[in-house]
Image (tube, rainbow, N blue to C red):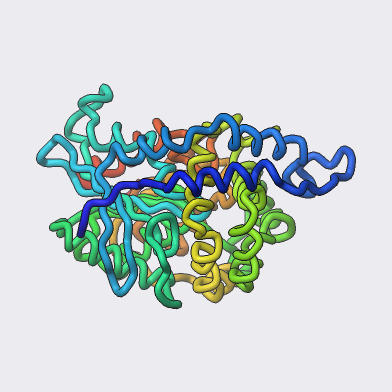
Length: 392
């Protein structure tokens, strides 16, 4: 493990500005709004802000204010943040992002999680944080070979935690990070105290009995699932099948990369007109910039290719292998997938904590950082007190 600092060469930033200024824009049908994709006027304005007002060096400095490292695991370079709490008895916590996220999405929760005393909290709630970049994402590049599926990443994360001297730890994640957290709860249960997730996919098995007596909220959640399959899953199908072809377009056009990511922030949150209603614009552009500056549109999409069969099996109602550690679930109602508790209990017999929030979506650490921090702390307290074994 060697220390790492982000230091993007100036010529890359100048190249980005030139490309943004020379963008070849398409036309747009009148009155379409977001129904056919990202609106032209909105994207023009956001791209101009990216070119003229967004300060990558400030974002870089904010990231560099936290200790970062690079190591090699199973042949792949792995970049990670390692924030040691000032509280010596803090619990180790491994936090994993997904797509199209990055380690930057956790910037607003690092302080409260690692140093609650300095943020008006109880020092007993402190965590030592390990926040890795997924293989092929951000500075965990280049992706050396195929096969980096959920199970392989979970094995790498277990090796990372062992290398840092953490024998017992919590895991947390949303999106792909949630899937990896649950996999760690299966494959590394002797080391994982519990798995907290802020996304959980629950698919009907096809048995009509399990959907009898659905209330309005549950019916609406099934409706979201149907809408995703019919309207919002085009990005996933493309990344599952042709990530390399997609990579040429997104690696050559910063506006293409911007549109590809910003649409997810609109569709997967509670935004009504634009994503910046619920996420900070500069933090959103920090994430987009990380994909652009590291040219990882293709290598990050490979995670979808590797997991395509697993997604198909889950969508067909296949019950996954059991998770052997307590599970905590934070449910944000505007997420892309909003779980049904009855189906979650079918798939996970160890749910020990379940919280339903009134608002918030897929990017909880950016949209609702305070609520997410509180829920992680509450789950950890249950584990420490032993009440998790008695259920939520």
